[in-house]
Image (cartoon, rainbow, N blue to C red; front, side, top):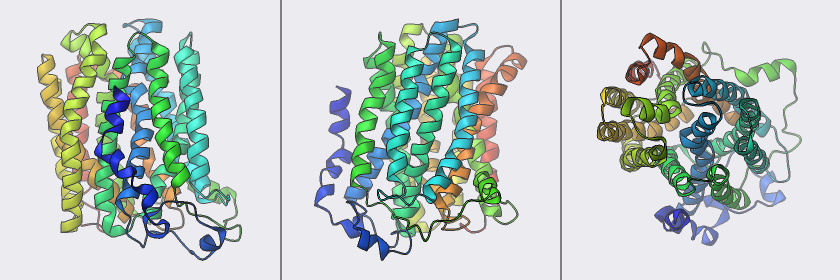
Length: 450
């Protein structure tokens, strides 16, 4: 049933026309060696068509699916099944925190390696395929793990490999999409995370009763669309002559962009970090919030997370596309990011004060408005303020530290916040709301984007 829903979506119907679109301007099909040699830089000067956007959105959504399905439901439930509800928050903090630290290192590292890959298969494609394969293997280890240390090992493998995939997938945006379309495409990509959340929680709900199927179902479906995009991608190619040489200083720059030389990038980083910190608190502890604060039965948690994700995603889908289009038409990014972060913070306060599942749903829906506009415009803003074109995947990898680090910090400090708040998940989510609101104002000093 879940597969029928995915295959019947308008995005997939657009993808059916991809093979009929020309290779040069739409970013699909393989390049010949001669054609690649004539292209001095990223083919982002040409407008991309619906076929490319559709396939890219499917692949991006599938990449998100690989991350969010375990984070939202299966990983917390796996940990809970091994140690029980009393020890589960601390054990989850260990697993999620260490995994997020590896993601923080892996994303820019693999991004830099992708920028320097002179393969006959292109710069991004090899990392998509190998990252997918290794990540699915890590998820299998987690699913079969008999103890927390084995869960930790499997999740670390999955995080490293999936971040290699993510680094290559994100780099496709500056590679292929011209500046005038980035708001639109970012808006479409902004729908991908909530769509992945809905699909992931729905798939997990379908397979309730078999933890192995709950873990591997999203990998099988997401992997299909990622491979489809990788095969048809008109990938960049880097000649051996253009390939930069490695040095210790060059390696050190993998994880750093100078705030002094690129202040706009630094402020955008800070804004994203605080926003994702708020989301990390919500996503990581959503299952325990429902069990403890709302009083839900464990058997009802997958269904309730699915309904909450669905309510949020319905709003995100509309807000993301509309926000991206308005940003392109007005030429403004900052006001959208600021407003969206503020709205998301208010939504977390609603969730923090909720005393019933209906109140939780209202908060999730309000959060969808802020989240949708934010993810639509923030990525376009970041691409506009990248330090340079030679290291786009690396720089985006550094920026993605802002999306990975909170998932390490949030589980580490959440037990402290819970202890200070008497074990109240309402206090935890109020702290998350403050993070989002502070992040709203961090974007104001950016000068290269309006």
